[in-house]
Amino acid sequence: MIDVVNLTKQFGHLTVLHDISLTIHEGEKVVIVGPSGSGKSTFLRCLNCMEDATEGSIFFEGEDITSYQVDINRHRRHMGMVFQQFNLFNNMKVIDNIMLAPLRCAPRNGRTKKQMRAQVREQAMA
Image 1 (cartoon, helix red, strand yellow):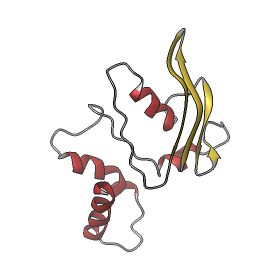
Image 2 (cartoon, helix red, strand yellow):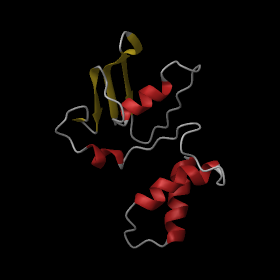
Image 3 (cartoon, one colour):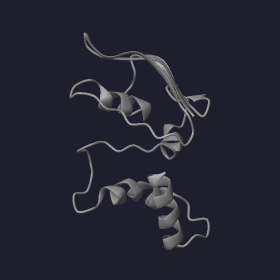
Image 4 (cartoon, rainbow, N blue to C red):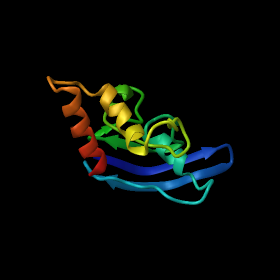
């Protein structure tokens, strides 16, 4: 579960995100839509700690990932995001772009490539 509590992000005097709070439950798929410049990518970058929030906290599985004492790479392995027009391979289908990271990073645990692809595809389409 991801809990966002009073998240604010400012760039100088410009407030891009103001006091955002929400809960995303395990397995829930979330789509963030809005006009260009409304803070969608900034919000996603804050969720994955690619951008530091000015104020507020983000809890992932109960742990405050905005704390400097947390191993953020451990949490990033369990978060997936797709940014429109960022680092997508145009020679691949959308589903293949989405499945790329889980297939490369997930432990095999004795599964064949075919079994892994089937499981990752099922999760991506859920």
